[in-house]
Amino acid sequence: MIAIIDYKAGNLKSVERALKSLGFSCRITHDKKEIMKAERIVFPGVGAAGSAIADLKELRLDKVLKETFAGGMPVLGICMGAQIILRWSEENQTQCLGLIRGEAKRFPSPLLSDKGERLKIPHMGWNSVRLTRSHPVCKDIRPEDEFYFVHSYYPFPSSSENVLGTTEYGLNFPSIIGSKNLIATQFHPEKSGPPGLRILENFCSWSGQDAE
Amino acid sequence: MLSKRIIPCLDVRDGKTTKGIKFKENVDIGDPVEMARFYYEAGADEIVFYDITASSDRRAIMIDVVRRVAENIFIPFSVGGGIRTVEDMRSVLLAGAEKVSVNSAAVRNPEIISQGAKAFGSQCVVLGMDVKKVPSSERIPSGYEIVTNGGRTYMGLDALSWAREAEHLGAGEICLNSIDADGTQEGYELELTPLISENVSIPVIASGGAGNIDHIYDVLTVGRADAALIASMVHYGTYTIKEIKTQLASRNVKIRKTW
Image 1 (tube, rainbow over the protein chains, first blue to last red):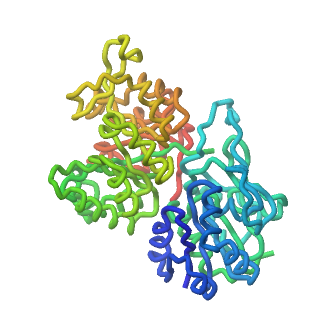
Image 2: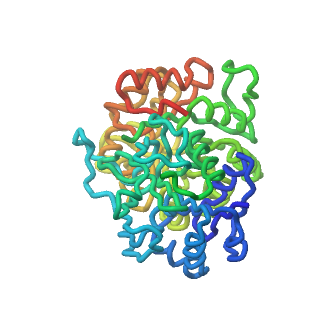
Image 3: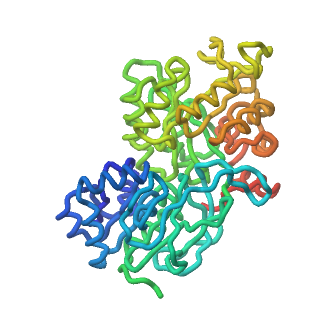
């Protein structure tokens, strides 16, 4: 069973529907026991970092996430879930979970394309990902595949070792990050059509062992 | 780089789509779920549903459609038409839509934008704007006025200042429909679209007037639109989404080419 962590973080059902369409059983839950005995965890989220961390703490899920991560369970962070696994977020100046060293940064304003055009923030829509390291969860992802993004902040791990893929939007930012049994995407795989579903499917068969 | 989006729009009345013939024999063109699935597989970047149901039990019918669509497509889709309250927004989003669009209700009560953005996040709130060209005046300095009732009622509201206000209130995106161009198939409004797009920092979806691929090219380049809404062009089988995208890509428009 896959536990989708429920901390009032918006549209969790889209993740559930995507997993179910692939034939995986999953449950949206904030119950500690249920999460601890799950086979793997999906950690989604939209909204602001400050309230996300506050909600997690209120439900005491911050500790649960740290424990399950330390215990080796495969964890997939999505969108906000790729930012608050870092130590710090510039959004609301928030102390975060610290599962990976680094911080979530805001896109600089003004943000300019390589042609000097002013780019809109949030970064919303379809964009590609350049894989910088191979990883079982990114298996069979092609360079031309695109994914659906909606965000104004992006994850920035301290070590490039934790960067698995990058995306170009005014600057080159980490869009897939990971460490050990944790992987996280800034984009929404559940809304990214077949390539996104492939990532979810790969995650669901991943042992949690890093490839390299 | 971010791709420009191609977005088919489906009108839904009493739980059935109202347009669409001739494009694939095994698709029930009356069924919004099958139509959505068809466009999902054909490479649509997003889908817009517009509820034109008039009956009083409209919401229950549409919510059921939204729920079934959400189980079948894994790209973002939005729902508009008859959204009057934050509760209306909530029920559509909970049923699985990524975004909800408000139009005339926001003109009457702009607070619905800020309330929606606060409750669900700006990325969920689309402002739909129906716009007509009028002589420029003190009241309507841009020469574009907001209209409702399919263009019959002039609201005395300047389109440019309304777009800016909506952004300020927390709208995450604007769907800009030119009533003058709508249904003509003679091209999008290429003065209005850049006027709005260049003066707000949220994405603008151009709507109204698409008849061929040149029109889409124009609105995504000189029109400065982030996305193009299309209807008849694809519903009647004149073009496929793949054809549209292949041609745009060959003319150096950044577009999502694989799915």
